[in-house]
Image 1 (tube, rainbow, N blue to C red):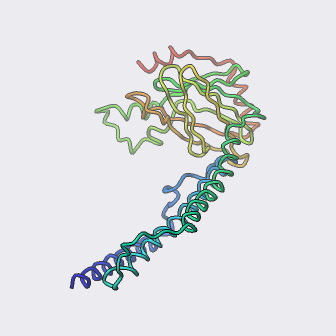
Image 2: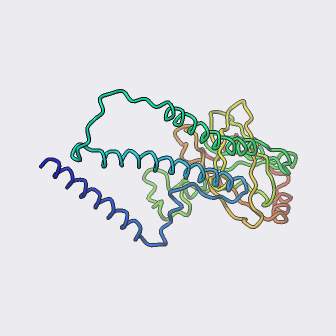
Image 3: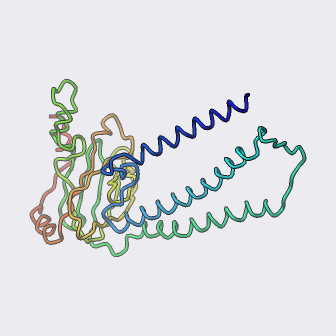
Length: 288
């Protein structure tokens, strides 16, 4: 009777699992399933990172299917209710031990080779056409176009800053890009390899834009670097955030990058010269 009850529960749970899968499959085709995964991005590097991520994911899925499939098959086919008897002796198979050692080693090597290739490419900033120095402050960013005599600070947009205050009476849902907008975005040209130098003035920050596929820490007294390049046919505004817990206002330190066609960027850059601000001026403006 106990075995019949177990089989009844097994069938009940199997039916529930099948029902849940069918319900998920019947959801509207318009559901944005991309939110469950990392974005493909708008650059060659971000696409390669995405492709590598998906390759590793499917390799892990295949391993999980084989491993858990074998476990489930053993539990269902060789259970006590079917007359299976446990082997109390010691079983040893040299061939099996070699197989389950060698096969995972080859799988890991096969995964490591393309991964190392991508890591080398991520670190290769050679051939950059533009260098931008990014400095993190509590809680805003400074952008300096190296060799161009252009520098400015970028902080949370006033609309978001007002809405986030306690008892402000402003509904955050009515604020466009709440906590993801700034007063002055970083502007870059499309179709250009850009070297980004990262540091910080006070504590550790992290500069991250999901569509670029890159995140790097900004550390006081240390220069980190990365490179970005937005596809020539994908101008637009791309948003990110500081992803290092850097203090009580950490959540109010967005990153906004505006990618312009090369000609428009050149005109914008020319219009910014000269344009220097000091950190003390921004701090004073925030206090006001």
